[in-house]
Image (cartoon, rainbow, N blue to C red; front, side, top):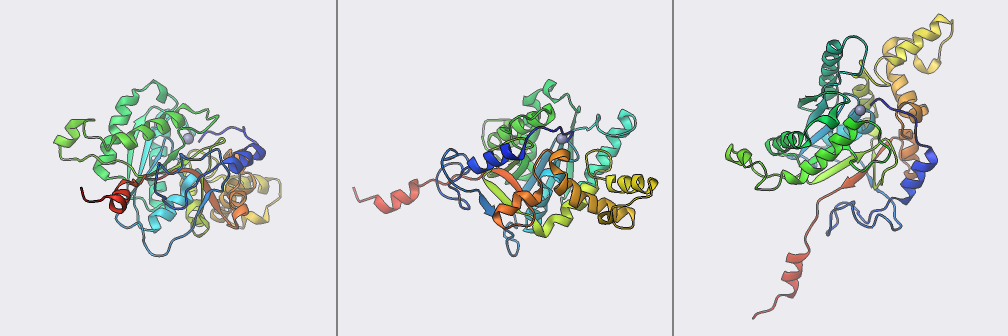
Length: 334
Ligand SMILES: [Zn+2]
């Protein structure tokens, strides 16, 4: 993530309060999430669903770095997978700049962390695109887009979770380049004249139908997801990032530092594993979230809606034509 301090709760709350959607589920007409963003309204609350309503659908969680999805959308990804999605993790950078040790060591350790993240979230496979960390704005976006279009078509991706291409004040080029290329790949994968060699190889056009976009800065939030049943799984995914980011084993490090001064924090428990999990849940995702993640606490996001733990997104859903219903209702014999 490589975060910075930047945005006050007031600003985020203002944006949250100003964010609009007429959407309730998947209403007919227009691309859900792009309409009526300037009028009054409340975000859609996405609650836990019984059974496996998403069985047969495919999810791609797409992140530049090993810790992005776990920090900002780990609960939602776990929720969607538990509700039936087959999920994949796509990491666009090689994470060579983030973590202790040499560049080569950092690349390997982040690759291993990413595999552990996928396992923790119930994702079936990792695809590492391995573009150089912090240098993503020098790559060919067209080349990256072509690779993502291939994956979307091959995996038949229905839904993506990624950074918001329109998130404000994002400083990391890996974040905004990935987000912008994902956004274009999602619809272009459905066209029949882009990359015709894919079609000759047996793939078919396949557009992404739903997008959950997260952001570190202000964004137009129109969906809040209740992740309460999956918060411990989100903690597990963040525990996997031992090489970079605010989570990993930092709870044990704090416990050791305090022990050196003959002190302890009761909330961290009596062993390192408990300290790591408690630190992630209560410090990274809650108490010190603004400083460590650059976003409000998952508790604070849920509180206005009566949810214990929640994540927020700009959601864009499928459009639905009114034409055929109009024809059925109004067509008369010639
Ligand atoms: Zn990142």
